Image 1: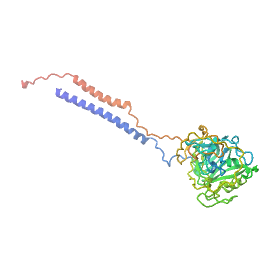
Image 2: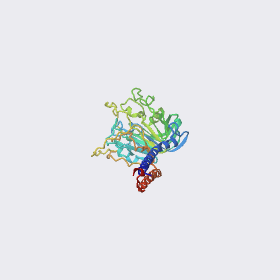
Image 3: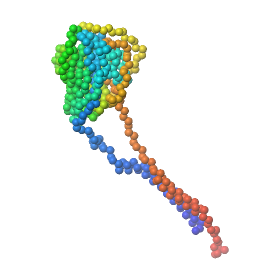
Length: 446
């Protein structure tokens, strides 16, 4: 074979090896890029929202969590500026009429019942005696606000639920006390039960307490406990995780010892039977509209319930406080059996509470409870101040799902492509080493 022919063959081999090598790299790259598409076409497709499995039917729960701030008035200064309204776990009995409840008769927790208060950072903490009279920033509470932001929280509720039909029947065990006028007016609610059928229901409990008269301290006698409807519920959305509902009040007529005022945006009442039950305890007028400028604080706050240990947080109240001068002075200040020490001035002011979303967020009820809220001074719950209501606890952490990267090309694919190209290049190099015979002149050109 002549020199020109060898060079042509050599050039062809080199060109072919380069083409094959390039084709191998491109093939690997294209193959890697096509892997996600192949996986998407051959893998099991994700179900659409309508095809996603839905839990249905009646099922049991035994770890439901109940949270309720009752009303703003239950977390406010009373109409006697020397006393406040507040909550207590268990049955808090002042002992006799005309008494202000003492700290040793008040409790932050008994069994599954706990009184909590939200701090300036929006975290729910176990309530303290000193904090009953202050808000989240340490400011004394008032008749029209700020409010203390306390709530009752009860765990280990048991019963049944059917989210598909908005049905739920759950009961909790335990007692909490609603204290008005520092202890002059007291009633208890025991073993609250939530019953919802088709989105309509009620919260009942066994009511108790002591018959009293704020203007006659000699009256103090235990009332016969009985089951009463505490609030009526409508448009209840029973979900897989829980529910949140604002009880009915506006536009509900009632008959009580004080005439009901049925005008204005916030006129209404708690259920008639509940109001009638409270009448011997001198507390009925605090649960329906009577024409006071503080009537708007009587509206019930939302009830939040979570299943499976999840706890929706009580939302912040958005009801604005009136700016008018109060027109409801106290007729006679009830007697007080304990003296109020002068409050120690606060050296620093706490930062304002952070704004929280109105949507309820879920928090684990079985997680460790945060430490008690710091004391704001030595004030007993008479003439003190209270904390802001309804900020969210620790939010449920939700992580986003990132898209999966395409799988890299396998070493076997790369090695095969480069091996073929390398072999051709090696063959071309060997041909260069083969000696060529010298050209001999042709006889006809001698």
